[in-house]
Image 1 (cartoon, rainbow, N blue to C red):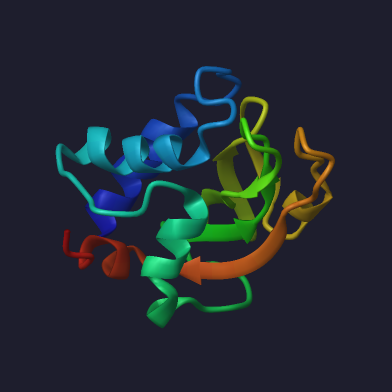
Image 2 (image 1 turned 120 degrees about the vertical axis):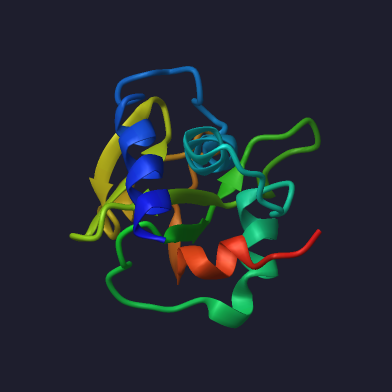
Length: 138
């Protein structure tokens, strides 16, 4: 598990500052794990949907290294704001690497101070251990 985690974090950190994933936080998190480890995971179509799929393992407090960190967040859509959520990867020290306007690192609670395009703010829901993400069946 440690090798998967370190590969994922190293890949994510290599994208710091990139705007390629702006607005695509779940794609960023999934690519970090999948591309760096040549595996495929099965989550939802949005960060919010993925969080719901893993809710049996959702934990509060400071996220552990390599965990997926989830937030409620209203995002723009053709039909108005939708709670597609937001997600990132924990670096294990209270910091989360995530795709917002660019790939960046923020304190997991400070992410709640970021303003979405809808004017909404993310609301911390908790974190899910990487083991649980890997055990999700299609």
